[in-house]
Image (cartoon, rainbow, N blue to C red; front, side):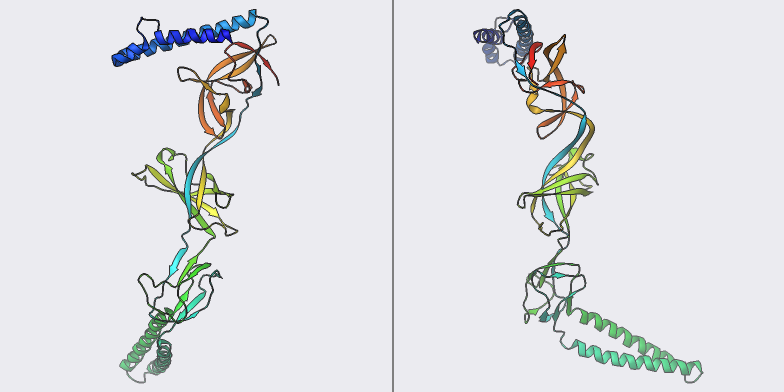
Length: 388
């Protein structure tokens, strides 16, 4: 311990004084001269690297000469290529396109409400009936007149085929039959507006009007039902533009719902073609299956989109990675030489991080023994004892 304090004192002295001149760091900073400060920093960094190399050499010498020196105990693991999937974490809300308010298309009294809140309904199912104000009686009369006009036309056509009667009588009968037919069709369309049908299959989420209420089309407050389909849900998320080439249609995704404490698998169904200038992002639509009906519109969700995959990645824990004075990252590898284990520092280049593991792009190879426990206490070229 006394030896360590002495070495530390030497390091601090040289770092504070430098070696190229007698000017102290405090004096250089006080000068407020950027070039002098940069020069001083380069000098201090150079001295620090030299000291670090000297200290490592001294440690090796001490380890080889002092039989009483304690050899660090470490554990190792062998790094091997493995499948690596990286996921982009985003926040989003559940949505559905089939979430609508149903409005009346005809003014009148709401005569019947044929369903209850929470009922599952099919597309085209009759939900409610509005008083048609006698239109059904008018339609019956029109149908009678249309039947008569059709019969008259058919008989007139037979007579005209036999050259009996005039052509104008035949044409008048034909025009009258077509006019009556069109009148019936138009009135049937008007009468159909008195019947409120389900535009798609779903669940009646709200009944906003009771039987006997006078309703009218259009305007706020005229809604009668809210109909929701929970079978085809999706989540819209904003993806940073930097992932434009990585987050594409068909990418695998995972969705976690904090409220439900449940996760489901999903895919990216669509991606947007527009970059939002306000937050430099584009939208991605994640399709979500909802067989149990527990996922509701506007539910908060955490989305994990697979933006990168490597079939043979080298992964090591973040805890075994350190950084030197130059900002370089390194890890210690246990190398066996003549039956002796030595800790060797390897400068590494890291890639993406997922959880507690980091992808190594360079500096390590398959089969290397990475020092795990004790990685923070060993020195480069120091003898070590591997427990495992």
